[in-house]
Image (cartoon, rainbow, N blue to C red; front, side, top):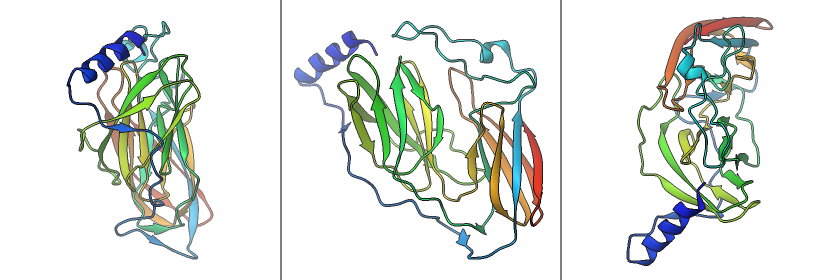
Amino acid sequence: MDVRWLAVLAACSGSGAKKPRVIEDAAAAKPVVPAGPYKVDATFDKGDVQIRVEWKDVPVEARASAGRTACGTAKEPAVAPTTTWGIPDVVVMIDANHGKAMPSGSGSRIVLEHCALSPRVALVDSPLIVASAMDAPAMLAIAKLGAARPLAIPAAPAAKPVTIVLPIAGHEAAVALDAGSISELRTDDDSAIAITAPTPYYAVTEASGQIVLRDVPAGTFEIAAWLPARAGQPARMARGKVTVASGALAEVTLGL
């Protein structure tokens, strides 16, 4: 993040300009709980689902760096496919209305280092911890995109961005997120997606472009994969169905 930009912003705020709303060490929100029709079952027939997401012949511009950051490092490409076109950092979701309870946690982290945010897509608890590993002050913005609903992804921000101030390396800010929501964290050089999932049957594909969801209830369900917009490339989505048998592994491939 360019320190000169921060200095200009500070000067403007001191001259009567409206100051941005700041989140710094925000209080923790209530725990994330399943919402809507989802029901937790004590016992149920279940199996596992292996999901592979691929995008054959990803355009060169989506696989190439979009230039250099203010830190002098190369910007990450929009998509980093494997040699067999598997796509990492894709949100996958199964529209199951019952099953296991939501996992509990003590929060999740997104880190700003070398002007890049990591991870780029994360399933998080609230509060989300935003941490700096920069050697200069940094400012970020976070905006709620909308509700996290299976098979329905918001296309535009549902709320105005809120500023996060990270004055020094090692500083952390705790940001309270709504249960069952999708938020975007953004800097001048990069962006990241944080999702507080409404059910346990959400996941993010690994570097291989695959992920396994465990203990999915037996039955036939709709399934979707969402690659968020990034680095000037639009979002992409794929849909399908999966049939889960008790004690078995179902395999499904979704093409973006």
